[in-house]
Length: 89
Image (tube, rainbow, N blue to C red; front, side):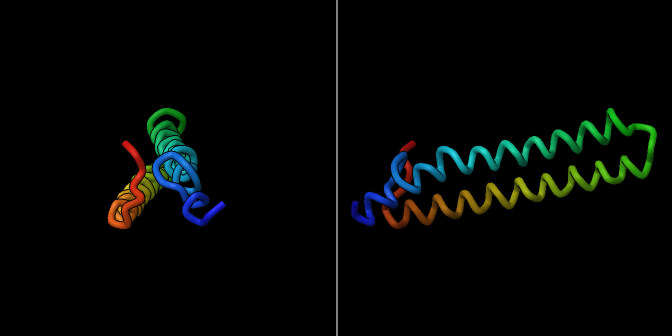
């Protein structure tokens, strides 16, 4: 197995595993954290101001995490397309 086969492109090799498995799982977990913060803020601890503040912080940091995640993912895809090993659409 050559290095090019190991790294792969599109849906094969390490790049394929990252784009097809790892990144969607991380995005799903990040979105689940956001939803959990919303549920805590509005439904579970609606009357307790201290718990609502914790839920608000959870929502804020989930949004920041999602923004960073999408930014890095976009940067990596730009880098891969520049190097000519972009994933297939």
